[in-house]
Image 1 (cartoon, one colour):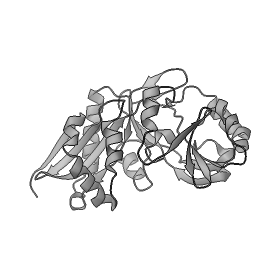
Image 2 (cartoon, helix red, strand yellow):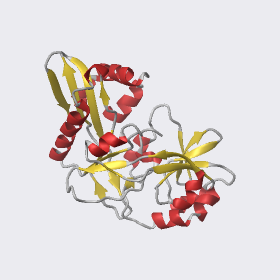
Image 3 (tube, rainbow, N blue to C red):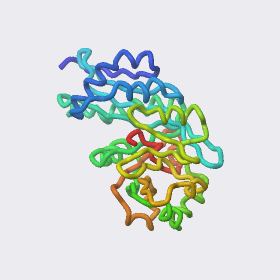
Image 4 (cartoon, rainbow, N blue to C red):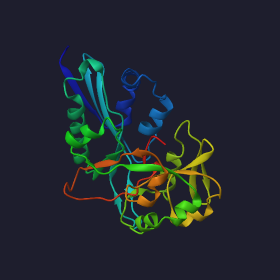
Length: 270
């Protein structure tokens, strides 16, 4: 093994030069190919700005990768936070004893602080939760959940109504045209807008990409909708399909606590 070299990439022109190696490392780590179109959509075509990517090279070969993409969130009071979405963490099997996951993430967060970001957030999978919490200092609470519900069940939920009454929660801004147009151009996904609702066909129902109380009434009767719900919405937990964990870390104002309106739009998975 030669001396490891860490490189911080902060603009798309630099990053494109490593695209082939990044896709190769992804396939090595996850035994599946990364779509080039998805990679370009998330990292190169992102209207929020440039990504921040930390990579580790061993003799010129890419062996480690951690990245965030800018993904600004806003609440119903019009307040915006400069936030980024945590993306794929990858370390070659040959280099997993060198704690590259932690060091690469901290390098990215240091650059985020230099660029005056407020938070990094994301949806770590079950195997990653412990590492993000213990090694990276993320705030990760009780798991949220995806529920399969009807229009009437959404409208009848007192817990959902109470949750939506808090206008301070930060979520994806669906009113910003360039941002929502980019989000709905995610490759290999077909989204539709229907009277203020953003839907994606799934099996014999739909994924409801975000919840706007005023638009629920326009949903079709007799259909089932998969919705990402906060852990506090207890009266809909009986319709759970699976848990989906969210977390974040403050980059500036480290003691501050934020509240979030989590939705499928915020995640790169749906």
